[in-house]
Image 1 (tube, rainbow, N blue to C red):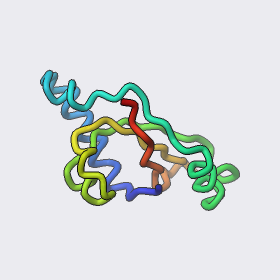
Image 2: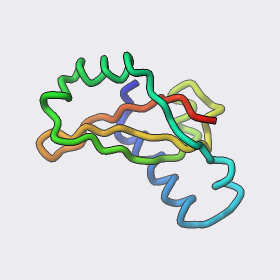
Image 3: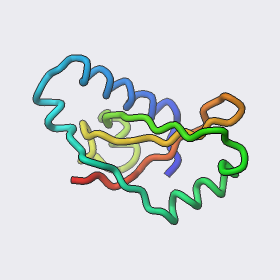
Image 4: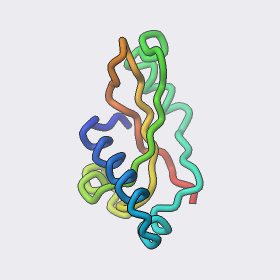
Amino acid sequence: MEISPNLATACMNNYVSIMKAGILKPILFSFTESVSFSTPAFAAWLESNNYLERSTELKVSLGIYTPEVAKEIGKPEYEGRLTTFVWPVVDGEPQPPFNMGEMQP
C-alpha cells in the first residue's frame, strides 16, 4: 500500500533513534529477519503510478513503526516492529513510498 511520506519518515526516524540509543530491549522487540512484498500488489503499485518509466531509482529505507503509523494502517500489533519503505525517486524527488510487507518472523 502507498503510505504518506510523513508517516514513513516518522518510522524511519524512530528506527534511527532506537538503533543509535543502543537500548537492547527495543532492538530485540523490533527484530525482523526480512520483509516480503506481494509481487502482484507491488507490481500494481509501480504500474499504477508509472514508476517503472518515470523513476531513476528505488530507495529502500528502514523504519520502526510508531504507534500512530501502526494505528493508521490498522495493524496495532506492528507498533515497535522493523519495516521497510520503497521510495521511487522521480527527477531527484522522492515520491510517496510503498509499505505493508509481511514481516518474517
